[in-house]
Length: 218
Image (cartoon, rainbow, N blue to C red; front, side, top):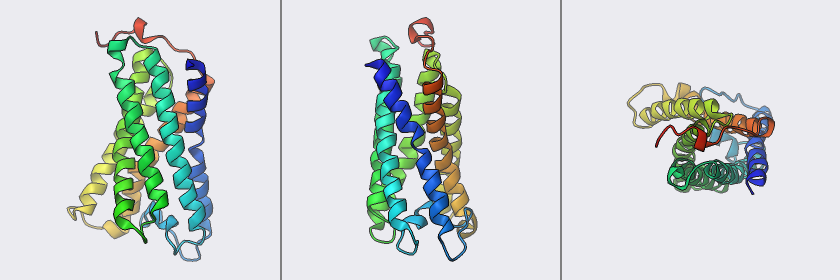
């Protein structure tokens, strides 16, 4: 079971790369300039975007892969630990599942049609996603598995971007229309890249020291 969880979960995380491919393809179809600094990621899924359906499908696929990968890899890491030490990977798995559900909600509810549901999904994807990948990174560190640095680094950087994005939305910081898209990407891209790196690491370096051998927390 652990071996299957590792392979399938890791593959799901690696498949998140499709989002970046679709992002580039869809933005290239715009006849008006598309800016990573000023335009939101969700602009690619609105009706003004030439290939908005493809982008929204990409969001949904991303959500499914995020949730499945988080649950399976969380269960894999949990299996490395004693029952009393499994809170970290189990919590990471739940958070990533919620983040995945939020991402699916984003794809099914474009911002120009159902903005309320879209924003709820985006909030869940960003906050739960960064928290989940950070905790997964810490769990990987505890068990000596590779990929922990990507998880902890990506989650930390993503939270920094989320804080700045939140300040923009609250009008605390000026220039939201000039560089709001950039801060949103700092909030989202690192956690996705971290998941891809974790997935790749689990496929390439499957073996790690068991958490029973590294009891950081008694």
